[in-house]
Length: 157
Image 1 (tube, rainbow, N blue to C red):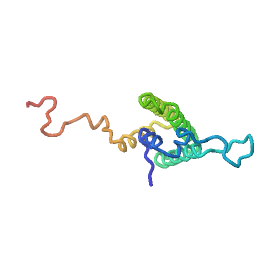
Image 2: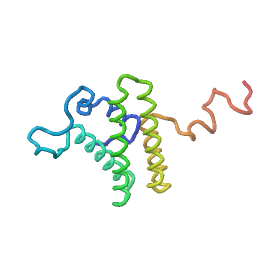
Image 3: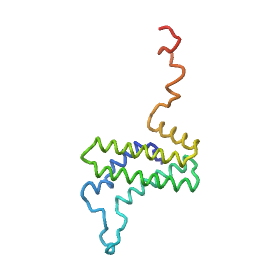
Image 4: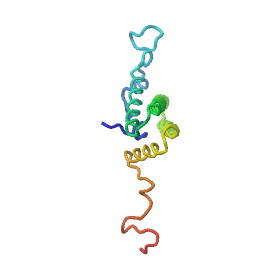
């Protein structure tokens, strides 16, 4: 099974996750029952954030042939991004426009961070995979010779 490299799709899945919705639903996400006093155990929301970030990182490591050092940097980027989206989801649950804007900001920041960690070839491959999975036409697909019958420069219609 492959994990989608598409940030918007991953973020959309994150938003739809019932496990991560615990904080929004008012459920306790602090200290687990049975934890020693004063010690905060990982919560289901934190576990789900870590699992999503790890799955995304593992997929990227395989698809982009990341080095071990790159993998750890990418894991930190992915963890922060998933955590920030979840925080925005809880904070802006009553403001869908603000939530969308915040998610977009997190996604753009993540891309900039990835650009600093990946080689130019890896980043290009990442972008290509992301565009393929999102169904975004590439710049190359929108330039060049138009399909027959659609006209173009120098053609008489």
